Length: 442
Ligand code: MN
Image (tube, rainbow, N blue to C red; front, side, top):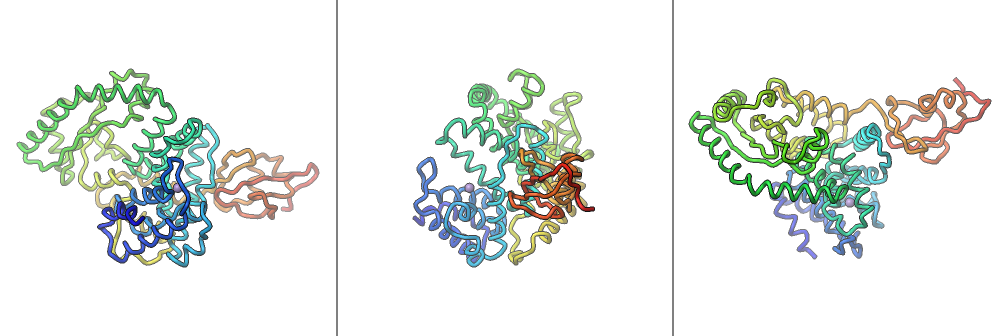
């Protein structure tokens, strides 16, 4: 059975032997706990947490993200307890596992766009620590990859939730490859026929264009060398769902989508960006109205533009998003409290911004999402309501309707009677009981 862990080991080379030891222990603990359980596909259950840990490991995240990834289903699905995890692996790991388990209990039922946004905010607010989200996304990604064995109806539901909730979160956090994979898998299982047609069309088009792509890349390389700009050039292909979305939004046929291929030119610093741009525009004329300067006017995810050019630092942020700031740091293994970590992480983002004038819009979103001053709670009908932080059950009652507020007599929070003055927490299910001739005590 040890062979399974060996499949993860090559991804752990950036860790110390001690840390690898801890992760191996987490693996063994998880394997024993899940012993005798199997995935729908017939594989032993441990293959799932192992794959969920492989994704953050590939991003060189700190070891405290890997152990929770291995353990993320243990408390929910096996007799092992949160207490045992804390004793064996410490408080930080236990808190992260608990955070992921909490998110698993939330179900998103609504089809409304505004509700999806609230649900995303609720998830982020409940997660508190961004690493909980990273584990959750790795969990979802592997589940999406292995959905083949599920009934079609269940596949469609999970795929739709992935498109509505998890892919946008991955995008918001700048986890580009996770975002694309979640969207393409979500597309595949939510619209199986359209997915088949479009992926065939792209494959056919690719046949014709591959040669052209190589030709363009070589021409770019030669031109930049001639202009003495040091650069790395890579080609990229627009992912399927993004082609589909563009066709839907702009009412285009597949043949009218021009930017299926793009080239990324990574140079050393900002002045080189403009030098390279000048060289490229001399080689190929820019399309009027299609060129955007995301250095002068920064924008989150600006690299999706055909003509954007990025420095190495911007590229790092673009490729791995916030995760790049959680990359392993050797002296950082102490068990820090969540707020300190979040603060430090935000600080590191702000430092980057100060150094490079990087994406203030992107940072704005992150701050709003990770340190919200709102709480998100469920009504009995499953609607999500946003209230200011510190709001009580009475505030909730008035937010539902003035009459409900005026006549409230009691509240059930998560199906238990509680005082009306109780402050609400993220994810609470709140039900107000009223009486016609009652009014709350001021
Ligand atoms: Mn899982």
